[in-house]
Length: 267
Image 1: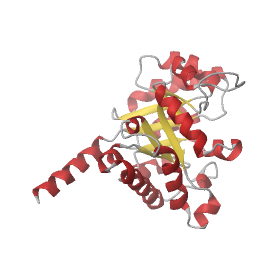
Image 2: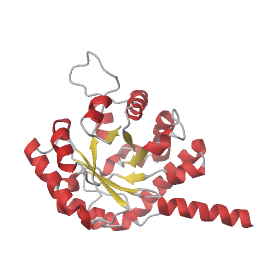
Image 3: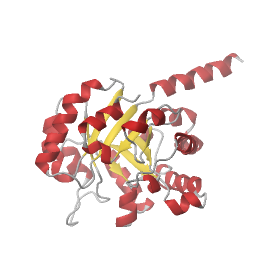
Image 4: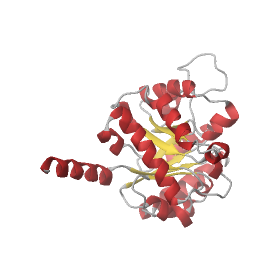
C-alpha cells in the first residue's frame, strides 16, 4: 500500500512540475517590421504571465534574426515554423535545422496540419526533421491531429495514435525530454470551432497513454502536450484546467499581443 501511495505521489508531483507552454504560431503573417513590433509588444507584457508558463513565439523564417535580437536575454522563447528534412545541400528554398539554431532559435514546430495538408508532409519525412532538429540542439513541437472526416468517422484515436507511433516511437526516452506534442483538431483550426474541454482532455489523455505505452509512465507524465485548435482568451482557462492539457499552440490570437498574453495568464 505504501508503494502505491508513493507512486501516486510521484505522478502528482510530475504533473504539477510538467512544463506549461503557450506558443504563438504566426504562420505566414506580418512583414518583418510588423513582426518585430509584435515581438516587442509580447516581450513588454510577458511579465504579466505566471513565471512557470513558458511563452514562445514562432515566426516566419524571414523574421527569425531580428526577432531573436528583440528577445535576446529574455525568458520568451523563439521558434521556427518548420525545418528541412535534409542536413544541407542543393535544396533551393529550404532552411536547415542548423541554420535555425544559428539564427537564435530554441524550438521548431514540425508536422503542423497545414504542412501535412498543403505540402504533403509525411510521417517518414517528419522522422528525419525531428532527428535533425534534435541533433542541432532544437526542441521540437510536434503536431498531431485529425480532420473533420476522420473525427466524424470516430477515427481520431486511430489517426493520432498512428502519427505518434510513426514518428515518436523512432526516438528515445532521452529524446522525449526535448519534444513537446501539440494536438490539433484540424476541424477547429481557423473555423471558429473549438473542441470542448472534455473532447480535448479525452484525446490529450489518449496521447499521453500512447507515449506511456512506448516510453513508460514517468516519461509520459513529464511530456508537455498542448492544445492547438482555436484557443483564445475566452476558452483558454477552461481548456488549461484539464489534467492533461499543458498549454496551447496559438494561431490567430497570437497575432495580437494582448490576446496572446491573456491566454498565457489563463493558468
